[in-house]
Length: 315
Figure 1 (cartoon, rainbow, N blue to C red):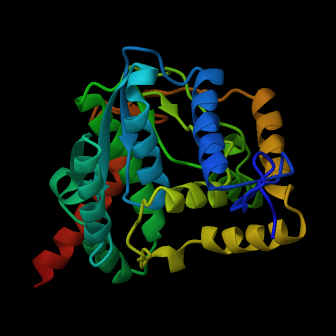
Figure 2 (cartoon, rainbow, N blue to C red):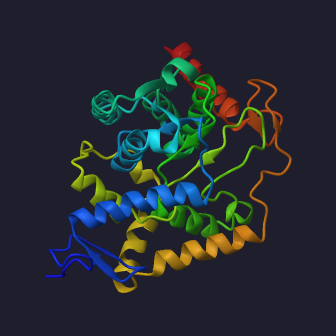
Figure 3 (cartoon, helix red, strand yellow):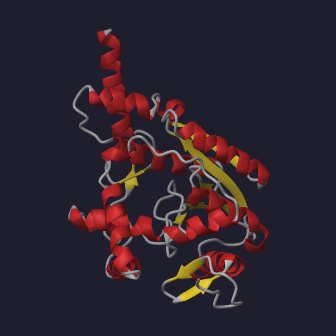
């Protein structure tokens, strides 16, 4: 049984890049110190700022909200949680119920916005309609665009200076490999641990878990008693990302440093290219940031509404 490098008691986690085993107490201390050091080293937040934490109700985002709530005074920031209800039956409502309980317990204001109220349809309704015309758009494509749009819009509404997301090392590596496979060169190193102000209507994002493995976040959440309902999004089967995720975890079993090296490659590419979206303009419909005259959220939501309208008129 591995022993803690610090105190010699039973270890509960191993930190590959350090080559150390840590017990429950010292792992928790390490994790929290890494969270604070990442924020300080990357200049993610400043004292007096309002930080909106994007929360889905999953273990990663709940852990991020917990840490920001625990250290808000030390960091000198005001914290507000923002969540999006996409309208995924038997999934999202369970996650949001858990989130509301934790937000109340941690005394954090929570703002929930929905696809239905903002765009006029739920994701379930959109997917059902799209399936009838051949599912030309995957559920994750629709959800990703509209979710990011709504998070940014809500962060603006609540006056947030920063939008914190719980993307961890695994998330970053998975997306990097997906872009690599698709030869999406423009996106390979575009987003790092932070983004700066590039548009007045785009809240800068920060990712305090950017350099932290998913396993470590899960271990910390478990040790702190942070529980998320064990339900999986029904649309995950339509995404290629879960295949890459499984493959990466298999690779990590043989090489525990693999994810670190891939992230380092991503950072190297980022250092030789601009992370700022070139030609960013303003959507003529909604006034939000866009790389074209009409943003993807407006185009997508308009397309889905047109299909739903056709279905309604056919009855």
